[in-house]
Image 1 (cartoon, helix red, strand yellow):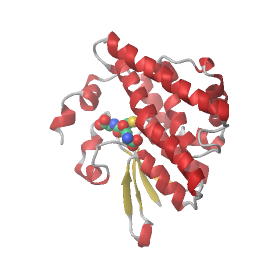
Image 2 (image 1 turned 30 degrees about the horizontal axis):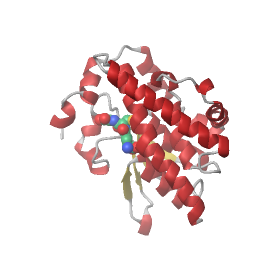
Image 3 (image 1 turned 135 degrees about the horizontal axis):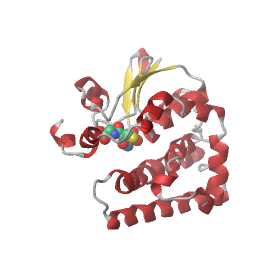
Image 4 (image 1 turned 30 degrees about the vertical axis):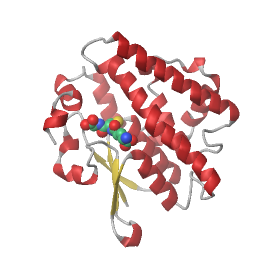
Length: 234
Ligand SMILES: N[C@@H](CCC(=O)N[C@@H](CS)C(=O)NCC(=O)O)C(=O)O
């Protein structure tokens, strides 16, 4: 059984989507990042960068538990362990998945994350940063749209690269983007959104998400996530 250290964010949903696609049972362990639970020493042993998601597979290689942090590494591990599902064993096809997964990890997540930060969370409205990350979001959406004009999925066939990218495009409004401006991307997005496993993956801890959305942002959470506590807590 896998223990999945999770919170209701795009990086968390990548892994629940894959586990739901595979039909695996898993144990969700909530890590409330707004309350600072990512800094608990027992969690830092599993995830030294104090970020969710992370996991422990109690039936790891050699029948020993294995702990993994970084969502891309988790997706690759699970896909391989499942018998090369959603990441083919064939080297050429596998590296198409890996390159689009790395693009997600290195560009889609970090740049769209900065767009969320400066458009939504930053206490000051910094126009330069808002423009920089909104433009970068539009550029990234353009790269994805072009690719999806050539192939139905990022790596040619439905894979962990799509599962990693889709959750990041769900808050497109926060990134200042309209899906209608990217027709190939929109077609792919609608198709992925309609998959029952994706819907189940994105419904994990739904009540928590709804609770969070119904209350005003909490200044204490802001300080935990973006303030100097990030340095002091370590
Ligand atoms: N590259 C990491 C990024 C993970 C990440 O940024 N997680 C955020 C939530 S989406 C987090 O745990 N933040 C807690 C914090 O900043 O202290 C991954 O893909 O796993």
